[in-house]
Image (tube, rainbow, N blue to C red; front, top):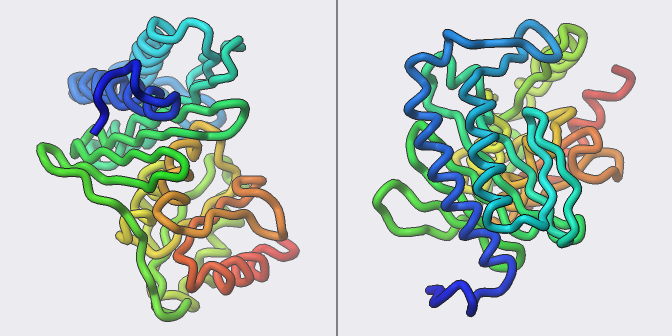
Length: 275
């Protein structure tokens, strides 16, 4: 275990700050759920919503991070944007899964990642509804800590074939994009065990890391959607990649158990061809 802040290396310091900040933000989010529907606005489409609690959570996170590390940069979903001078940038989603939050579905998370010189080195995803905490530091594995429990190292799953693979996915906010994604899912469903749609990208990635699903894919994620969750998935041993030899989330994001990652990527490329 860690001894003192002075003795910790930088990624560990960043992880501890992210964890403490996420726990404080999650408490704010839980406290605001009962009245969340009273102050709701929309962003890119009528179904892309933001609440006053999203905004308050982001403000709290940014304040805590920059109070501790005033030279750092920040990128947040709800508009926080600041160039830093330290080489560290925080990538923040104050409530990933806002629609779930509005409806009381227990899958909405505070996601905080720390980049160092452009590479994610530490990440925290905290399910505010359940208290499950996912953490990762690059090169040191991924961990799930249940409320009041002991951290468990994550190692994903090992489906024996694509046909026995449980796949999670998500959909965009624009009607045209949803039409395309729905058509792909309809075909994909005949090739895999089944489909799951949780409505929270960071928790989808963590679910794959925990072996609760075997794979996850989605188009057009933003950095705050995946920065922490993708590190958790990669550190759990999943293949974290894009399609057509492109990087992860450019524009396709895939996180899959190693044994079926190749066939799944090939299938997704075929299903998206020409669409």
